[in-house]
Each structure stands twice: as C-alpha cells, then as structure tokens.
Amino acid sequence: MNLAVSRLGINSNSLAFVKQQNDTFDKLVSVFEDKHLLIPAEFIESFGTLRFVDLFPVLAGIFSHGGVLLIDEFDTSLHPMVVMNIINIFHDDTINKNHAQLIFNTQNPIF
Image 1 (cartoon, rainbow, N blue to C red):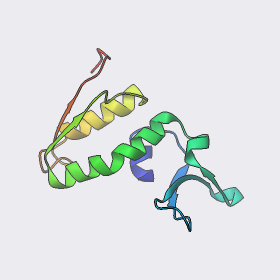
Image 2: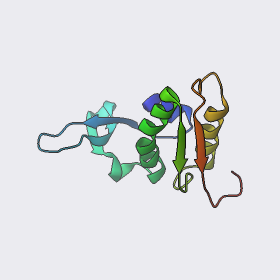
Image 3: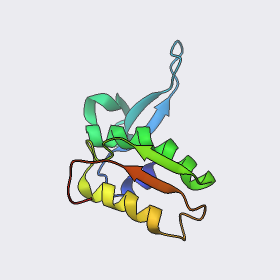
Image 4: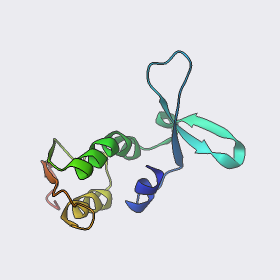
C-alpha cells in the first residue's frame, strides 16, 4: 500500500495497520520510524490519503479479478493528479490485464 501511495503521487508518511487488543478492526497509523512513534492516521493524514487507503483494497481486487467498479463522487478528497493516475491505470493493459472498468461520476469537468 505504501508503494502504491507514493507511485500515485500521494505525499504521506509510511502507513501501517496495528492490531489493538480489544478492537475488532486493525487501526491505521502513520509510522515515524526515526522516532519510534505511531500516530493514529486520522490525526495526521489528509482526507485524500485516508480515502485512498479505503479505496486501495477495492482497486487491488478489481485489477486482480476484473469487473466493473462503480464509484459515486470518485474525486472527493483526492488530488486531481491522483485521480488521473488511477484512471490511467485502468487504461494501461500491462497493469489492467483483466480488463477492469471504472464508472464514476464527478462534478469536476477535468475528468
């Protein structure tokens, strides 16, 4: 996930999921290795980074298995270049080998 984040042009700290004892779900944290510090991602990361982390498993699955992905307001909280990079991946046959399709709506006329 960290590699995908950096290749799509998202400037973020390293991210990791940490399992807490009594929590049902893993917690997303920002990792500061030089200070041996983990901070909950929602305190320090942008909404765009958090949105990408939510989308990442869905995108990985659609590229692995093919199919059609429908997203409402796809560009919400995401930088326009990140959105363009994701769209370009759908057009890249070397990555999108299973011919996944993306259908989305947006208010942004760029897309």
